[in-house]
Length: 309
Image (cartoon, rainbow, N blue to C red):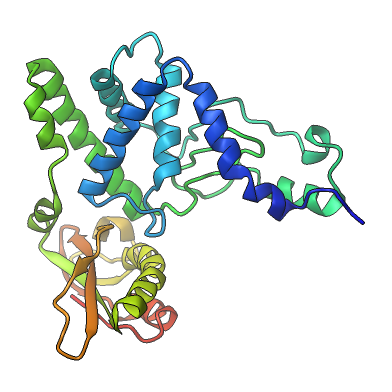
């Protein structure tokens, strides 16, 4: 029999390998690393930008970013508040899609690195290595071989929101650290749902309904993955106004998805319902927008789910 490891088998170990590598790279101060990572995750969740499925970032992505700052700025960072400030300062001004990598990227093929693998596994591994010519918006490379982009789901709308929120957080943390008032940290970790809705005037609402809690949970997970794509598609919607939409679609329409799902009141028949929102901002001169064409692929993928704006 063939006892050589398969690509699927190797991938199943990636999570463990990555965790071990991160702990090794941050061994200078595990407590500092974990404290800052917990703070970043809580902040991201409160901002509505914590969701790998919806095209933002999940736990692994945030863990890699925190570790990168801790490693690269060892001489400047002495405590958690300064590490947090450096985190927001670095990534709010990062030149995306320049990749983030914690260790030098190995570009050798799998045969050179692991000669014991069979041809099919070698081909699969080589095909998964991050390609500098890819169109990924936010490359955050894993620190184990093969170097893959852990944030391949991130789209332009999601990246825009994350960079914007990190810029705001940078300013807030800077004020807190300069003021020396520990009680001010509560402001950084406040619930921000109300601020999101107050800062936008137009929204696309995707309402998810199902009979019973369990069906609703499964249905919601399915829909969330397509809302990620819907947000990207909406930036190409047809506009009418003083300038042609074909000139600069991203300037005409900008989407701002929110990663949180909001539960609606269940009806008397046991139908569970929740809503997801994508805010829209329009460029100067845009007077009308037709979302029909750009929402149609989402409706097909979602099996006939309706959205309202």
